[in-house]
Length: 398
Image 1 (tube, rainbow, N blue to C red):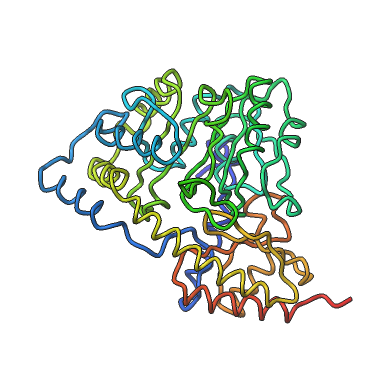
Image 2 (image 1 turned 120 degrees about the horizontal axis):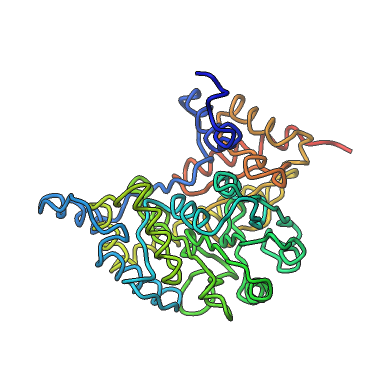
């Protein structure tokens, strides 16, 4: 293949650092992986049965690009029930084949070449890559360990220019597990309203919050769409992958103003035509009646989170902001004297434990590694034991 015949956008789109770790882990058959955000649970049985029943009925054909009406109604009902937000399922909800694709649709619909998108960082690996794919310009603002890696309205405001089109909000956050409170989201909302910005709100971990972040009747993270003046300028990106352990089903949805959904639907029609029909039936069943399963998983993740925190408390070297949501801890490894990429590489080679180096989440992640506690509790316990022993053995001595 002649590189000159390939687009510069394709050639300069960064590869996911998470994928690099996954590939390296494949070469160590007995490795304990604390690298991937892959729930250990399987999809709840009622959702699986709904997909099987749809296949047996022969409901395997194209659907409306917006998604099955019953799935959109279930998504709207769930959003009202869990987040207190009302969306019209006919015009303001769109099914998408996973949140990553939903994020791409949102960005492709909003951005003209050269438009800027503010990305609090460290950030999920797709954010800046997709901005670049859409010919936009990522603008990074820091997420500070001393602020628990939460979003900060002042930092976002300082990054706004005449070319800023949107800000990406991710709470609970990946890679940090940070939950930004309603008051700070209100301040961010004022920045967005003042400057006419869109908010693209990645809420795929909204149902998994812990400790002080659990407030009110529902244990969910607050949404910026519920803040003053923001419903009409927010695109909520949702997925069933984490909430219902449906990663391989590739089903999620957007919730946004009707005018925006009309455009994302038009682009989706040209890119993928239709969503997986049996997966939509499974998604409808999940959203319709499996709140108890979500709460069960939230409590299970909280128990695994405590395994990670207990291990870190025993370390003389490692530090991490206590994660308040999602199922990740972002661990400061600078006390070992090793760059995080080297730490990750040697931990896998010497201790057979896989973690993701912080640089995979942008330059601001340097000096940190991400640990996922979505997997088997025994693996988490043993993996953290090895990680702490390795780090403390490398500790820089004054």
